[in-house]
Structures are given as C-alpha cells and as structure tokens.
Length: 105
View 1 (cartoon, rainbow, N blue to C red):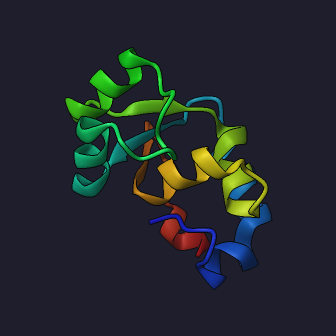
View 2: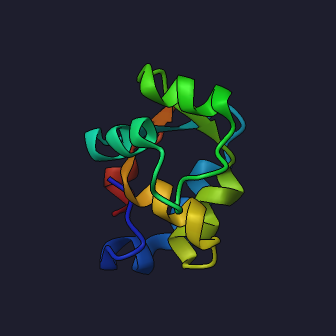
C-alpha cells in the first residue's frame, strides 16, 4: 500500500503524516515471502544484524511494530539503506485506524 515511489504518496505525504499521527494508530510491518526466505538463508548483507527476536516475529507472520517516524523517513527517502530494504520487501499495515489512507491518496 505504501511506497516511496508512488507519486500519490509523494503528493499527499503531509496529509498522510497528519492522519497517522493519531495516537490510536499502530503501524506494523509484515515481510514478503521473498524476505522470509532471505531471513531463513541469512546470507543477504542487507538483512544481517537483525535481532533474532525480530526474525522470529517476522517468520511467524505476526507483524513487527514500527515507529511512525521510521515510516515517514522511508516515504521521504531519508531512511537508511538496510531499513529501507526491509520496508520495501513487505507490507506496511495500519491497525486501529478510523482513518482510511486510501481516501487521502
């Protein structure tokens, strides 16, 4: 749903940020099948160094809570390379939201 390469996201980033700053909203990351395979193999330098507890959560498809500021930096193109790689290889999910991000886009 979210991608820093989506022109709608770039155009509406201030509105998205404002909507997501609601304290009742949580943001989770769920890895793609490709990323889960890479986590199991453990040979991609872009994912080396991830804490084992995070790897376990991601492999169990539970979703990993991410900070809103991390999402904002990623959407702005200002997040470090390793975290950007992770977020680009999965799905960002909004939980407990009464805000429909699709309406903003």
